[in-house]
Image 1 (cartoon, rainbow, N blue to C red):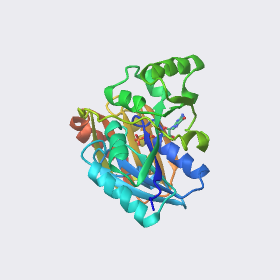
Image 2: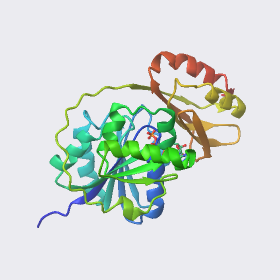
Image 3: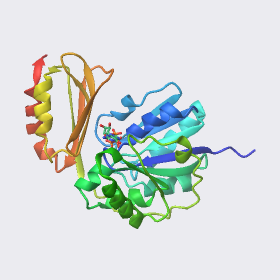
Image 4: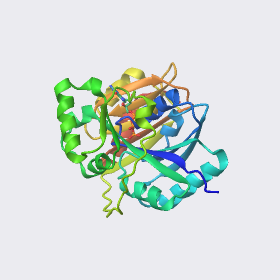
Length: 297
Ligand SMILES: Nc1nc2c(ncn2[C@@H]2O[C@H](COP(=O)(O)OP(=O)(O)OP(=O)(O)O)[C@@H](O)[C@H]2O)c(=O)[nH]1
């Protein structure tokens, strides 16, 4: 008997565009048993701690890029998860800095146990308005999409949204483009896409532009001091995320392109990841400033 192929969706999109937000939304609305594979950029895995649910199985693909060096590990993880939990559905979240074409090619060519249902690309409307020139990696993420969620629609005007839509359309003529707020979209627009288009073998020139470092601590932090620290990150840091312990409790911290949010979250300690272009020379100074916000050890 022929084995039934498990449908698989790839979620991609630039740093901080809303991929984890989409996963959290999917877990709220999608009743089937889902296995999620996350490939993160940064030494500490944050996303897999944020995405939690009853009917969900998680696997971390580790730091690195599933677009190239990790493909073997990816295939092994998919097969292992099918054997061990037999999910109804598999979702792969790629890092924001990954070009998904090699991954898509690999799924279609080398994974007979799965069927690529579709590629969903989450775009950040706020960031496109702030940084209008679309980089090489983002362009590939847009071009590979079957569905594009034009997310953070609440942060831009109607006419800006139209401008962005035209820009996306010029890179991808066939994808469905859906403006969203916090990736709220019906599951039938995400799943059952039944992608038929085949990804040709990509010619991969991997240009790592972003650098990251992480910081962990068991100290308490002062909230006002931390607010000032975040405000001073400027343009050195494009993305930061993780957990921070203030005097009252621990919060999930999310910073993208100068905007940030804190959300009460169950976690044990402060763990932060910082991502930016040419960031490593600034690492020591950034950590020094953060440590000034300690209130206790
Ligand atoms: N205002 C607004 N904020 C949003 C929206 N969607 C997501 N966010 C926020 O954007 C931040 C980043 O969202 P994530 O879902 O963590 O982004 P991501 O793509 O998983 O990030 P990486 O995995 O680091 O690339 C969080 O603070 C979210 O709450 C939206 O539609 N509107």
